[in-house]
Image (cartoon, rainbow, N blue to C red; front, side, top):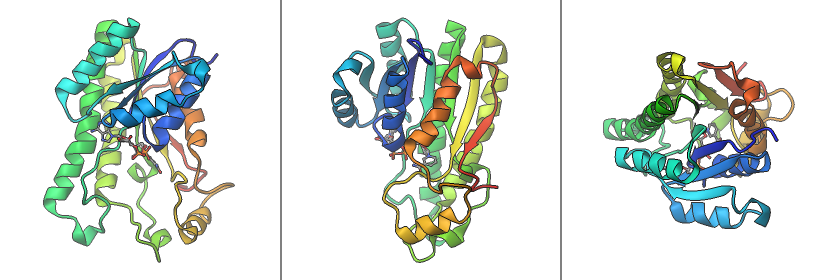
Length: 256
Ligand SMILES: NC(=O)c1ccc[n+]([C@@H]2O[C@H](COP(=O)([O-])OP(=O)(O)OC[C@H]3O[C@@H](n4cnc5c(N)ncnc54)[C@H](O)[C@@H]3O)[C@@H](O)[C@H]2O)c1
């Protein structure tokens, strides 16, 4: 088993990617804490896992933008398992105006979305980093995106309501660089820190967009959660024991 009783906290664990990650973690011998602001969705998801995984996944409430909530989750998980091995910084907070085109993004919305997402990722990495230092062991994986490494290809959205939000570029490029900062800061504490940058993930997007996107890719185009999760398992496992401060891009070649 690749994860041999590894205790992994997945923030945003009830979301699109989070659910796939949790399923793969428990299937590969790990124990998953499904930490989500929507604890009802997390609990429902856990209750629907196959019976044999019933004692391997736990739903817990978490708001990544609240220091007390992050500290409380760490304490609760530590109390339950006696250790935490890894955290996947994967929640996706945004306000109700998120996703607008550049012309329509207000200063307030820009700042709020950065606070929620980038601020929340900082808080989770900071609090878990300090906990991992006290434990002298830990593994932080920050979910970033190809849009943290490349300029958007706006033409692929033509004819749809979709865009690549300007906040997302600021947030994800910063997440990738904070990964290096944290990896360096905690270098001598047996903590490693990496980021994972997926390309687009299939989620009922319009056909025209999928075709436009596919034209830039190698063999598949938009990916499925499991295509990202297999690389997350590598980052969680000892197979990547000496990997730290890196950003792994998984995008079927879209960004090259
Ligand atoms: N889906 C994609 O195409 C894609 C591509 C590249 C990168 N990513 C990244 O992967 C990560 C997960 O994305 P997703 O598509 O699964 O998102 P999602 O919206 O499907 O799920 C996000 C989850 O985060 C939870 N959440 C929101 N605010 C929270 C908070 N304050 N505290 C705790 N939980 C909170 C939500 O309840 C939800 O369950 C994000 O970092 C995203 O940027 C996604």
